[in-house]
Image (cartoon, one colour):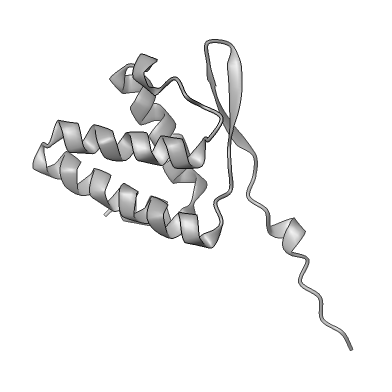
Length: 102
């Protein structure tokens, strides 16, 4: 008996952000990039807790750049838009949801 795991069926659900009428897909990161994403997310949480707004925003920018490569209008977002995009991205990965809720 042959066992088959269809990895194509395990692809993450599609998510996207829309800004200025243009829709940008949140990509499903490969493992190597996910590790870097997780480090950025951890840094964002730590800097947010420490009240370091500049470092927090830098981490949020990095998360958005890595996860939504077609989006380049970072400097035009307001803080609420940036954090909503980062939250959508964080919710994309179950491990990040757990980290974010601790």
